[in-house]
Length: 76
Image (cartoon, rainbow, N blue to C red; front, side):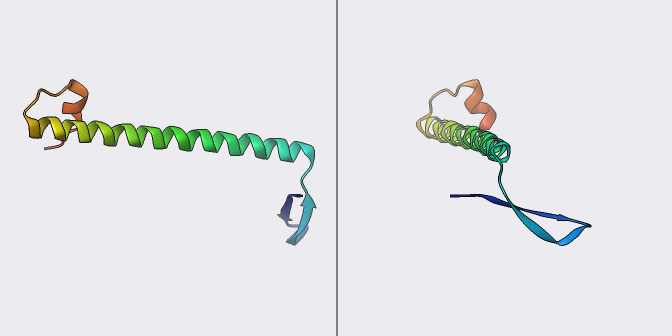
């Protein structure tokens, strides 16, 4: 499946369509992989924070001592 890009500039205000070159495809793939890596890191951090908050809440309800990280998640 071919990919295309639209180039709009003063000489071509309505745009022209060009097929991706091998370099364009490689750059696109790198950019896409970097985006997926950043998204996974963000999702993992969000999941870890939610887990930490849930553990802190469960320990508070049970009357157990909290770790420092768990205590830092509590907002009063």
